Length: 249
Image (tube, rainbow, N blue to C red; front, side):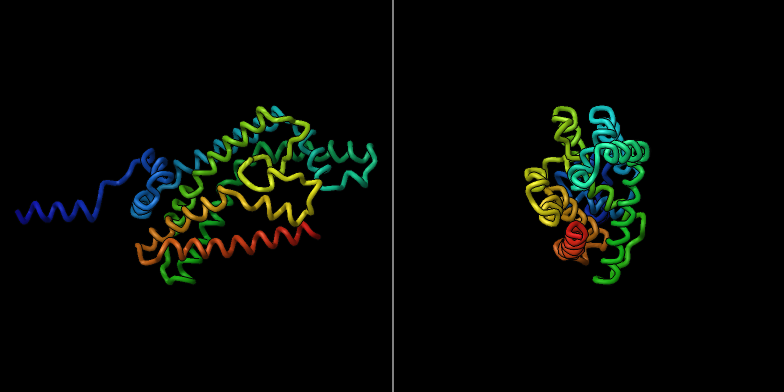
């Protein structure tokens, strides 16, 4: 009986680890237990590859359906610079921007790990500086990668807009219908207001909520998920205000 009781306690303390597939779905449906599993046995390759694939697909679809010339033209028009350009200057800017833009678009998926590394580093800093619980980079990066999985849904929504929307009215800065800015006209509101409206995105808050749960799990339940979430939220507010200030300039 004692051996059986010991085995039961051990199983409860160390439940079977989730597979990558279970973690994928668990990040959406059971984030607490999923991130506890990730913290025990971190592995960032499955979500990282999935994220890079979806954004590579979105970029290639954008190039194929919209075209880099149209993207550059719309970017110039929305920035307001087109008002001060002659047709010849406009065409020259489009020609020059299209060459570099196409290269960056093909390689844009490489930005995914860079952004995740930065956010993982911020999470590590928050845990160590604010809560006094250091965590390893592999764990932090795994938590961040899985927390960003909802952006796959955003990528799919973006591809639907690209595939079925009007290329002439395409907004390359904001083409995913999950933020307030998507439903505003960039020409009818000020740049700072539009910048803030774009930042008020469902997936941004979802991402921060999962970061809170994930990094709290990485700290071994010594930190509340809500506390970590508010740390990320505070930094996000600062970033949004900086972007609004730059937009005003």
